[in-house]
Amino acid sequence: MGLMDMPVFSALTDKMRWHQTRQGLLAENVANAETPGYRGRDLRQYDFAERRAATSVAALSTMATQPMHFSVSSGEGAFAAQRMANFEVTPEGNGISLEDEMMKVTTNMMDYQAATSIYQKSVRILRTALGKNA
Image (cartoon, rainbow, N blue to C red; front, side, top):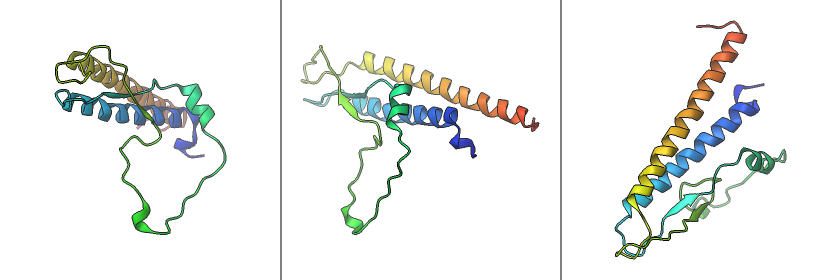
């Protein structure tokens, strides 16, 4: 059994990917804060139970018949972005509040750091249990 096959590591990896994807969306929101008519996007809150239920044991494979048939993804992967419900509309006609976005960025960064810390500590625990303290 590989390290990534363990449920705790796959869940933490998925959570870190969610935070990376969210960071990209929040950065887009900040970059377009003064773009007329722009509506911010955000990801739904991450739910371990929901992600676990969505993971099935069935294998899915794809086959490329024409290389030009693949579309460019928006970088969101398995996490669907949704429009934010903004109650404040700026004079530019968008609903981005830089203060709110920066608070989300900071919270997202702290949550990502917590997930990476848990990941690293879990690896250290396993190494200790295996007798490899190096």
